[in-house]
Length: 328
Image (cartoon, rainbow, N blue to C red; front, side, top):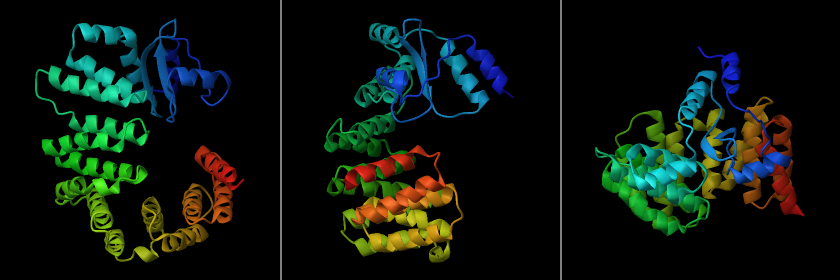
């Protein structure tokens, strides 16, 4: 089994520089290398700073070593790989470049490489979901209009992969809420419901219920019906189960419905929870719900409590700072 010592030994083959992406030199470097919001980010470059490879996320020693060794096995820079691909397109390089551009938030370019990968493969390969995912991310980050993601969603439905269709419908519903376009997603929600109807695993049942709730809410305009579907999915005893209060409150908050009842249950969870991360998570949600109801003073108080409960979580600090800025 790989160990921390082995990781340190592997890093002797490169000049390893650790930087805080939010401060000083690290901030400037993060902008140059498109670090984004996900940490940690590992970027392998040549001696002049040209990118060779990159990967993100916390992993164990074994997985880190595997990823690091794979990156070190080909020291061609990204620019050189792009130039070589244009001269001689191939499936392997198209996928590598698609993943790289998706990772640096160049989503439409990434989608284009997935299309080219689909065409260049010797065997039929379906990347319609990956293409949709990149269009959805582009729309989420306001890089394209919402409507431009819809043809990619339709392509997922055409491919008839049930798992991909249900995931697509879930993502599109969330995106539509963000972009205030929930009137455009009825057909995709219906396809997602049909695709997930046969699932009996916990995750599949929850997804199916959420899609049915969103269909009731956005297509049938039946808020009470949507709430009934959500509550039924939480189980007969959900009102006495502390672990269901967060998913219920979060579901209501994301859809901006039933906020008074949502606040009551999340508040109850905060009062009963022991100190620590669990309580902090609920307090942060409670702050969001209060903000959505226009109760800014209450929102700030709960955000402060969340920071106190879990000071290591930077998202709670940022939430508090945002609320303080909004109250000025």
